[in-house]
Length: 81
View 1 (tube, helix red, strand yellow):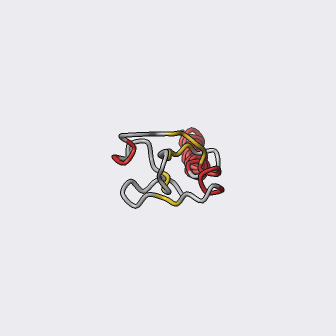
View 2: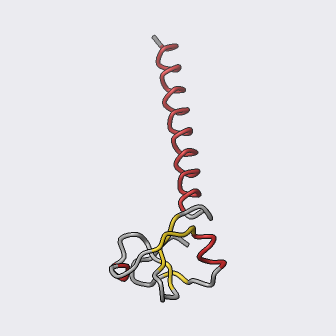
């Protein structure tokens, strides 16, 4: 019985460890250069997809491209940085 409890405890510990590592990797991927942001035809800011400033035009680019083109983050929607 003790052996089963010990194995179960080790399993739970490993599960949470792997879950923590996966969550950290996913969080790092959220703001990678491959992250999609949106710009407008005439604007100088990049936006998250839900931003109200995107009602008239909305062009999809990567975060890396937006930064390289001189776009800065919108203060209203707080897009990934």
